[in-house]
Length: 598
Image 1 (cartoon, rainbow, N blue to C red):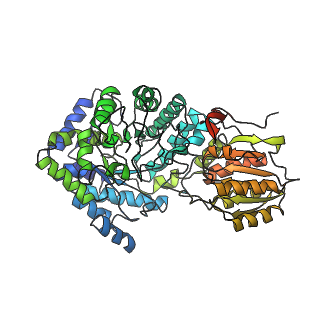
Image 2: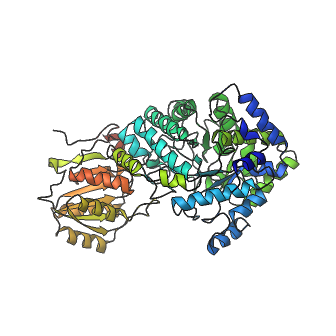
Image 3: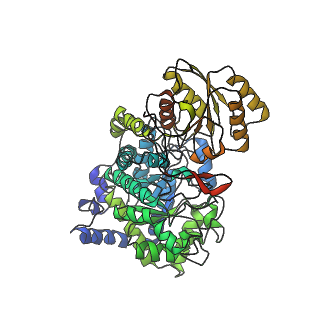
C-alpha cells in the first residue's frame, strides 16, 4: 500500500493545504487555486473520466470471481475495477449488493482500498469517491453485521431530529470505516401520494416542515462523521404514481405548490451544508415546460437549484440506466445534456463506453467547452478534499473492527426503532397480548424479498422475536398474493393458535381476503403493515393494527416488543391515511397514533 507521502506526491502536493470542512474559510481561494492548477495538468480524457460514477462487479478490485469478470466484460468491456479505472479514469464508483460489492464489512474495506490503490497508481493519481445507497429501511446496500436503522418514514413516525442525527452519525462512521465516502441519502422527497410506487416509506413523511427538519438533522449527522450526504431527488419525487426506473413520471404541481411543498426540505438541506444533491428523472412542467426530465433541465438545475436556491455543491444524476431519463433521448445524448443542464457527476450509465465517448466528442466538437467540464471537476475535487481523500484515501481493517456493528451502535438502532412503531387500531385493548391467554401465536403474511442484511423472511423474523419474548410463535408464509389453498391452510393453522399476527405488504385483494378470513375464525388478529401504513384503510374488520414502515430486523423486533407489551407504541403517523373509496376523507391524520398509557 502506498505511503501517505506517495499519495501526496501523486496529487502534486494538493493535500497539504486543502480545507477539510465544507464551510467557507480564508484559505478557500488558495485551495481552489491549487485544485485549478491540478485540473490544468489533466488531459481531456482524464477530465471526462472524473465526471463518471460507475458500477463494477466483484468483491475485489483486482481478483473478482469469474462470474463477475464475465459481467464486467459484457457490460463495461473490462475485467476488473482496476482495469476500468485504468481505461476510463472514473472519478467515482458505486457499490451494489447485486454487483457483489458488499459481502461483509472487512471485504468492503479491502475492495475500497484496492480501488484507491488502482486509481492512485495512475498518472496524477486521484482518489476515487466511493458511494452507495444506504438509506436504511427498505434500501440498504451494506447489511449485517453493520448497524441497520429504521427507514425514513419510521424516523418520521418517531419525529425526533436527535434520532435522525444519531442515525446519520453512526451510519456515517460505519460507512467511512469501510471506505464509502458519499451516501445517496437522505431522501428529501415529501410523499403526498399514497400510490407512489418508488418513494413511499423512503420519505420521512407528508409534512414539508417535518421532513425538512429530519433531512437537515440526518445531513449533519452524516457529514459530521466525514461522509458526504446527498439530498434526493431534486426537484421532488414525492407526488408520482409512476416509478422512474420504468417510466417517465410527470409532476403536476404549480410553481407555488412546489415552493410550499417540495422545495422546503431541499432548502433545509442546503442550509445544513449538504455536500451533494441528486436529480430526479421526472417531468415538471411548472418548472420547465420543455418536457425534458429534471436531470436534463437547465432551468431546473442551473436556474433554480444553483441560481435561486444558491447551491454550489456537487450535483449527481440518479442512475442514467433508468427509463425516466432514457425515453426522450439516446444513451449517447443523455450525459451530454445532463452536463449542459448543470450536472457534475454522471451516475451509472448503461454503457460507460458510449457515455464516456459521447462527452469526449461533445468537447472535441465544441458542443461542450473544456471550461464547462472544469467547473464540474472543481466541484468534484472540492468534495474529495472535504472528505480528506487526498490525505487519507485508505481505511484498512482496524476501523472496521472498532466501528462497524458495535454493541453501542446496535443498541442505538434498537432504541430509535422503539420510538417508531405506530399503533393505529386497538379494539377492546387487544394489545398488548398476554402470554397467559395468547401464548401460542401464528405469524402469517407476505414475505417480500428482504433488504440487505436481514436474517430471514419477515414472518420468520417476527416469530423468532416473539418467541424470544416468551410466546410460542410459528411462522407460515402466505405471500403477497395468497391463493385460496394458501388462505385455507392459514385459516386451519389459525384455529390451533391463541392469536394470529398477519403481516401485510402493499396490501392486495388477496391479502385483504386472508385477513378477513382470519378474523372470521374468532381468533384475535393483529395486522402489522410491514411497508406502507396505508394498508390499514383496507382492513376495516381487524381488531388491532400496527405500522412498522419496513420489514427489516430492527423494525420487526420493535413491533414484536410492542405486541408483547415490553414497550409502549410511541410512533405517530407522518402521513395521512385516507378512505379507500373517498380520498378526500382522512381516516387517520398526520400525528395519529395510539398508546398503551392508561
